Length: 175
Image (tube, rainbow, N blue to C red; front, side, top):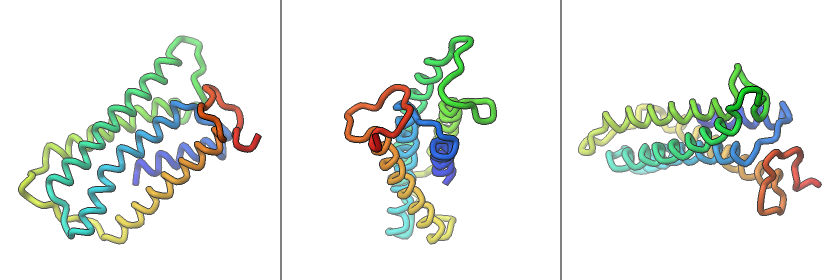
């Protein structure tokens, strides 16, 4: 739910603040989505079976670790592009930091969360969901909506071109 909120916040900056995301921004969004796919899969399987077993749990959070490492590398790459003194960075700052720096913080939090979960899991003990199934389903539907919205936003920005420009200034689909 928190990661969906982060991506929805990026949509707010994109559509309300009128800042076009660069290719690295979209890659960070996709890495966040990939980081959530593991636990989302785990929750969906758990609701179907009535429990969440150790293998699904470790696989789900293992996917989170791998996707968060990828996203952190992408965020660090973008931070390093704008590290020189006097470089204004890409886009406006939010609470004093650019979105790609916030993305690195989110990926670090996802890694910490996944690590804590993986440390305390016992493979031989199934884990019962502690939340109401309807709440999980609503969050999963919100997550699916975020994925579809991201796909549509990328398509609108790239149009029928194979590559996205480094510093986009418009939606190429509508030109």
